[in-house]
Image (cartoon, rainbow, N blue to C red; front, top):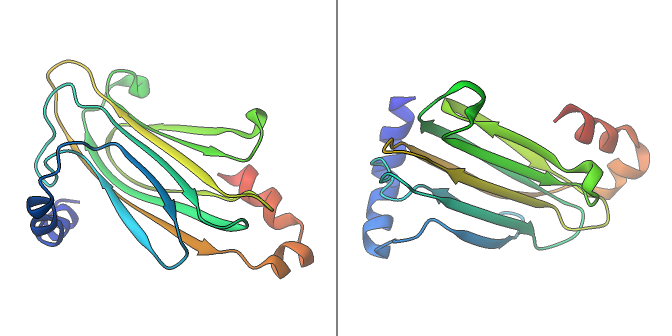
Amino acid sequence: MNIIFGILSCLMLPILMASGKRSCDVEAEVEVGRGFAFESLRFPKKYPPGTSCTLRAVTKLTNDTLRIRCIIDIPGDPGCRKNRFVVERDYGDAALLVTAAYCGKEEFTDTSFWPNHKAHIRAKLTTSGNKTGRFFCLITAESFPEADIDNNPKILENNILMK
């Protein structure tokens, strides 16, 4: 994982230095074929104590898939209660809101798809105490062929139930 952080550090450092980034709160509409980074303050260095970061991403078009791929290195604790990275995927109904909490050193991918609507992903880093960490996520949108949905209704069922 340190190698990945090192590579990302080399790639992202000039961009972050040029941007003078002060906040890690992001709201974005994502087009197919385009993506963006959601990373902690000071990335690739560790964020300061008490940092909180929020992401709200939505696809530009209906029937597109939204994907978040993350590498996190934040303090771990039982149940990820004090320091955690939470990802919510919305399938258009409160009963279909899927939430996952992560902490420690992890790599993960989460995907959101909602037929005939825009896909949504929300992520939030919350910290407590004087511990620090870092994270880097790449958010992308991908086309989801309508023909596949029409020809195979199990696709949606598997997408919702397996995540």
